[in-house]
Amino acid sequence: LVNPLKEKYNVHMWKHDDIPVPRDILMEEAKKADALFTVLADSIDESVLAEGKNLKVVANLAVGFNNIDLKTASEKGIAICNTPDVLTDTTADLTFGLLMAAARRIVEAAEFVKEGKWQAWSPFLLAGQDIHHKTLGIVGMGRIGETVAKRATGFDMNILYFNRTRKPEAEEQLGVTYASFDDLVKQSDYIICLTPLTTETSNMFTREVFQKMKQSAIFINAARGAVVDEQALYEALMAGEIAGAGLDVFQKEPIPADHPLLKLPNVVALPHIGSSSTETRTAMVQLCVQNIMSILDGKEPKTLVNKDWRPLVKG
Ligand code: 8YV
Image (cartoon, rainbow, N blue to C red; front, top):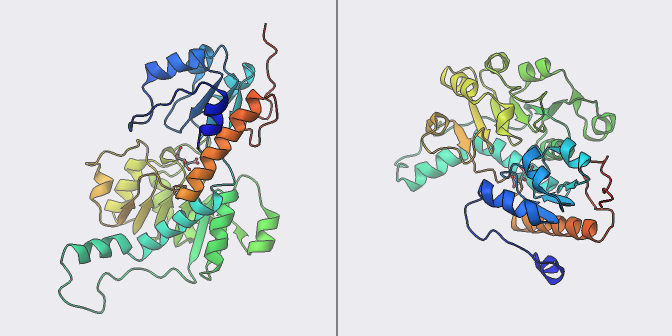
């Protein structure tokens, strides 16, 4: 997938399975490189950008860019590119799948069968909760939020959303209703977090927020782990203040196998695979490659994050 780059440029690839690249190697590469192709786990902070004397572009294999210091990048004339749009549908699919898995106890039930525990049928065996006609609250109504709402309309759900700005078009086209954060958490049967990680959203889901939810509520996080106070989530689940959770993201990734959240049967945990379909990851890599080529060729990149970016005239 990176052949177009290899044909024109000298490409240094980190070929080991352990991502991210060690910090010293990242610093070393940043010193020489014209372009960096990064993932979320790479922290592209001020010190990395300061090393990048020749650096013109950082292409991040994600729609999110909370791992990058945008302000410093713009000051240094470094373009930051992400991969929006190409991953919207795939991430929405997984997010809705996580809701279904948590609501209908799909993972628990599948393990039950494989572990040979299915000895008899009984009427309430692994009974979950209905999804249809329930209230879904979406926190963060961006592209992925809207696409999840689209999925949910097929399940005849009543959909609330909370977002920094109202989305009149989504209200009209998808029949979603704007609610305050407080009303949304109180009224929803399922709460899906899809907000980007910013200083405002960091630790947005506190114990107090979980306590406001219905006891039957299921919380889904497909955004960033740091949006949630994980200890508070654990305590809320242990205290029966909410009924379950579906988590694709964690404060520390990979989450340690002995983490208390992973011991709870009502938690479905996934290894940050929201955008991970072969088709989508391929499209994401291609978009990163295209963005790098555009910048190095002196053209406008397709998906620029720091809109105030201007190439520095060096020398
Ligand atoms: C990334 C993601 O692909 O796009 C994002 O912001 O969280 C995922 O889709 C994954 O984390 C690899 O960087």
